[in-house]
Image 1 (tube, one colour):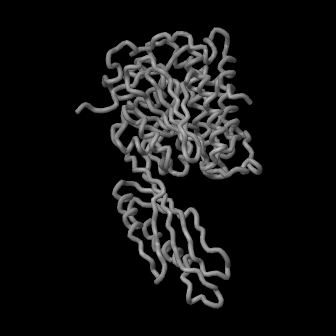
Image 2 (cartoon, one colour):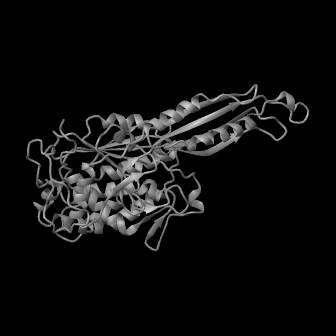
Length: 454
């Protein structure tokens, strides 16, 4: 399948529906384009998510849509036409295995993604990374004077090469399943489809949009985080393409997370003849892990011992052992206290040494009341005939950095499904069209004022 599946799906729209993606005909102005500082004005509270498309406009977003008769219906109809191409694109991307750390495969997928996004009018740059190239895409907006909208995603997955051999990408019963389908090949295919939809309608985003796709999110973005934080500067708002909650709700907060490597050094010796001369790193590590499990009983802290290695042979006292811990935190205080405790670990037996190393870390993104960006997105969804709400998420991601800084942030705008990181990972095919329409509308319509004036 070619990289331009999405574009082909757009051109299959009914006659008279507009030019194909990539034709870049002059866009008709949308409401708010000519207004000075058009995105800084406030607005009344958003209509409830259950509002019908015909409900009176009560927000800047609803007013902008209402000023273009038929726009919600046009977007929804086109998105349904496009959904088949996006489904095929998602499957195509999922069949390109891209585990974290596999630079050749990640770079091959980056090249495929670059071609697809260029076809929608993006300027594409590849940013070298130690474990695979990151991507930065930019689409010019109708209002270049406004701060940019930042969208973040990733193209690495947790699944090792060869997973497709016994778990192929396939569709059954309205679900598309396969390794990485939900997390997050669907999000990448959806945003590509949203930009293709705008191009097909001859429209550009309201403001400049930057999309940063990192190659190392599933291992904590040790390199990608620097790139994401660079593009946070000056952003009006930040959107994440991670999967939604299983019921379709977007994500309004995330717990903090840290990956910690616990390394124990002992002393090797013959396990039969000179066992007393040795110091078992494996035994020390086991005892340390038992002690460390107590951290999970602290308020706001969860711990998972995800990987353990150590020793060389059964007849050799182990001289080295290590464990990789995954920690999640409800608050910045819980994160700070737990990491401080790990750094102070001392050996329980003479001759052993214990060291805790933070491999990657993301700050907690706390829930905030009066989420104006959620109200805006909920209003757009209602205008499209969709019901949408938001809720905090247990996992961490690249939006943590933005949310922790207080920037207007939402995540979970990618695929709707379940089973991320599990063998039942899947997306709901019937939710592709609504998500494409929502993303395209969010890109095209002016943002309201998202921060209270001081």
